[in-house]
Image (tube, one colour):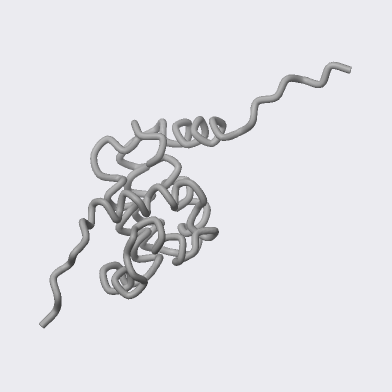
Length: 126
């Protein structure tokens, strides 16, 4: 008989979302996810299948509701578009569906968020 889960999935997904949003998918190691979520490696794999499975669950959860109002969700979406969507059809479909539902302003929304991450410098005054 399988043991019942002893962790709150919502908490695990929120912590994983923070890690993925902060450092990206490719740069994130399973060890970092284990540390952030306080799960054992085996529990993480049993619950989500893989790092990619966890990311998909995070992205699905993040894109529910009014996702476009949350800068952290925009960062996750940008990560998905840059790092996974070019080769991962299910992730690409999630991204496409969310952006299509948002409408015509999706490119501007994402572009503005990308610009928010650029450093602002004063011109050199020499």
